[in-house]
Length: 115
Length: 112
Image (cartoon, each protein chain N blue to C red):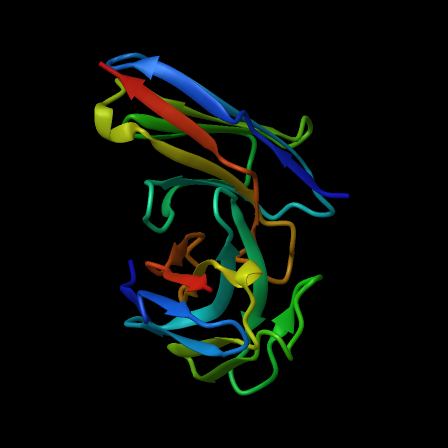
């Protein structure tokens, strides 16, 4: 298994500001992903965080709005830029562990409220 | 388009059995996952199926039929702590099975 931590665990932000969320894993991972879970809804994949290169974004998500970094194998950040109330959501990172285990682990999530 | 459908809510009594169905239509298939999510918490992994058939893990079992685009999660000997949302997720991508598409989730309510 893996222990995944996210910072901050929650935040309340003003419209127009940006927030950077950090994800740290204690094990060797191959892939890291960022998901969003809007209130009362299921999870939606935002992007794949690629080590040392630009993230790969899913349809409907763009780098200008959600810049992502992954400077090493076990750490990634997601920035929610120029926030609006519609960005109020839970943001979760998830990982695939090295070793080919068909299990994906999720971090505890960051609860974001935009006023 | 791509669809993953599961019932919105199911109610069952403690000690009973509940079966949560999931049907999917995706561009590709690289496995199906079931997750449990308690309110305010992150999803936790329950099961993974990539081949047809039944996978049993304690009180939880998961079944897959790829030809029918169908899976179910079976919860036996229900306990109050099993009250949660159960998420069906498909990995449609062959380059990474970690890129998941989720259903809307089934809220299971266990009553005394």
